[in-house]
Image (cartoon, rainbow, N blue to C red; front, side):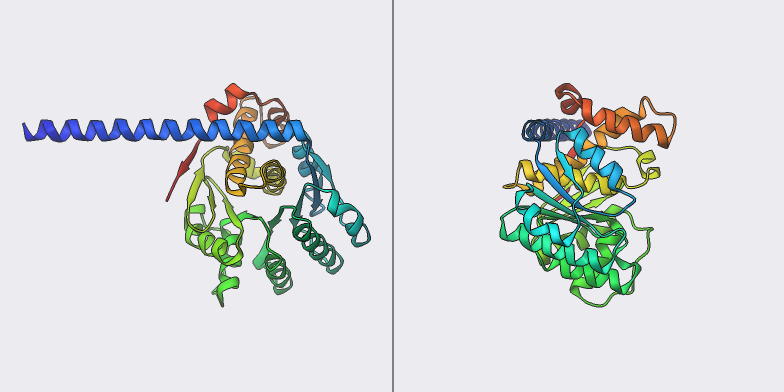
Length: 294
């Protein structure tokens, strides 16, 4: 009799948990679709100061989502152009002193203009030059910081003090506490890309579970999703947490749909862009999986 009670209680708890998860995913699906629709309707202008490798896929990702990309990195153009952009995306992948000046000027102007900006600290621990530049950019108060686990751990550790260093073997779950610390110290939403994308504001943590492993075999998909985050934040500047999680999930859903038609990484790249362009409400609502982790 006691065993029967325990079984009934366990079953009820599992059913309640499943219903809660379904409701949670339903809410996130609705929010993600609403934000994608807003990007398509508003076509926000996203200024990108990014690396040479990522320019093509970043621009095409933005266009496929409905946003308008602008690869403007010349220091002399920043005062005229940046105030007209709806959001700024800065990626330090192929860094140079000239570009650092442009990045700092654009980030400062975006903040003064009340525009959101997103930082991608590519290979931040690869050199002291790169780390110093990134720390100086973090001081300019990015709205969102997105990187892989090793990048976020390195940047968080450097922001807080000396570290033993990191490599590329970290998983996203290894970076949760580092991401929370970085969010608290910088005031930014911090996103960690991986098998499960982690998003935190320093207190709350959610995981975006969409995507496919083959996306990691396409150069600059991480850079591309950072640009998409900028577009989503431009569409919803009052809730960068929600916008960031939705962008990561939507990009992952596009990868899932694209994989059904792909034969390998090269064709997945093409179908990823096509799928992002063609995402409909039914697909988004049925596929988005974002769960609370704390």
